[in-house]
Length: 162
Image 1 (cartoon, rainbow, N blue to C red):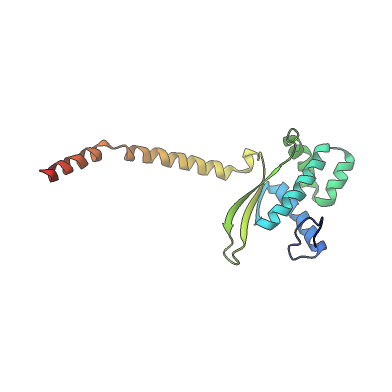
Image 2 (tube, helix red, strand yellow):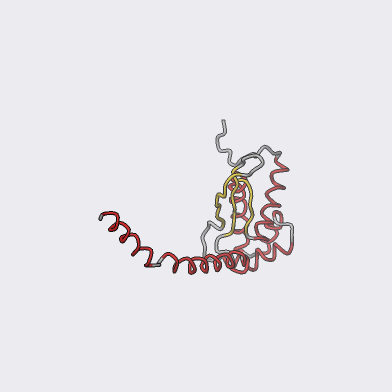
């Protein structure tokens, strides 16, 4: 029985699993969003939230503890400088999981895990796509509002009735 046993094994040894999560959390903090399978994302959420909570403390001891999991100094500095300040007022829930479908090769359910309150500079592609969509809607609106088509239809119905 699995009484009080928390976490998924993900068909990996303990060493492989911990190394994988350390790499994934480093990538998550570097890029602020990554795509992975849903079970991995759910476990990574627990792992990443604990590291961000350590970073919010900001003490040298918390930095040493976080350095166990985030071995890249550049990402560790980003975590303690920018990310900790961003989440200072938030009591928890620093990451979001969005399901995006299934992987073509093995039909595994895929998800995007991202930091909440992402910086707008981290996603310039999304802004460009949003502008294109808005421009596309503006072009389509005048076409849909043409009145002559609406006038022709009742005229045809009247002609058929006679």
